[in-house]
Length: 292
Ligand code: FAD
Image 1 (tube, rainbow, N blue to C red):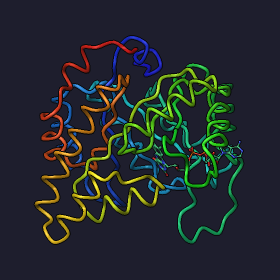
Image 2 (image 1 turned 135 degrees about the horizontal axis):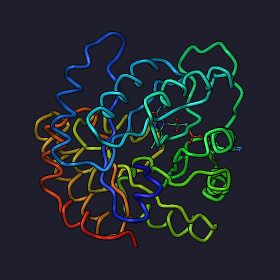
Image 3 (image 1 turned 180 degrees about the horizontal axis):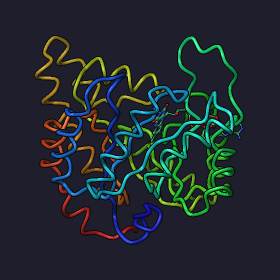
Image 4 (image 1 turned 30 degrees about the vertical axis):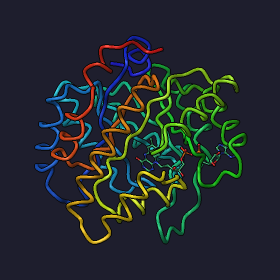
């Protein structure tokens, strides 16, 4: 199923997983996926190693999801790669019969000594795919609190519009713990003529260090409510986890209340915690609704 078509018909609910590192077994992820499928996700996305590292494992996971009968969306980054390499890599996914792909520039891995590759930004990769693979449903990344390399929201939105103009049919948002900031972003992109659906990304709050690292390294804000949890549970990992899950559930319900059309959970491959969060939210009510 194409996500572009699905997003027009209904509110979508979906998961992100990441492939195991190196030669590690796929079995734990298979088990995680089996539990996540109980929620009947509209699609599952699979992250891609920076610069194409671990590429084979992403394809393996993609195959697993595809074989389960669920719609799949691999992430795909272009940085550091030539057109020829990109054609070769994407061929592995096309052989599986994928219908969706999230096209990203990516970031160069630490210590990278090669060139930046044939595509400087995601918009040119999208234009290349639109022409070469017209049947694919193309997604791209967006940043409600702006990309860390951008100086202004206006600059970021200008390039986001370029991604839409080049053929992106939906956007997947970076984590954003602040629904008001997200609403301001949506207002701004709609004013700029960006009309495609935006799927909200939810990062479960599970570990104190992980939350601080992920949030700050992406240049995202920590609202007072979350800052209080970080402060209160400095030496209590279990307490932090419980309070973090409750915060994540409240955040999801606030996004639902704000009328979003898609919720994508970055599962961190942790189905138990993710299940508890989902069970505490009105996901059924959200899915019964239609995109506004
Ligand atoms: P771009 O769209 O190229 O934007 C990067 C910066 O350049 C921004 O500041 C933008 O404003 C600016 N810019 C854009 N176009 C132009 C232009 N034409 N001229 C000048 N400036 C421009 N990374 C991975 O390695 N693997 C993953 O699986 C992965 N999944 C992700 C999923 C989501 C939902 C998100 C939000 C991010 C993901 N990332 C992933 C991270 C992403 O690769 C990084 O955020 C990266 O720094 C930017 O990628 P992009 O596609 O947004 O780049």
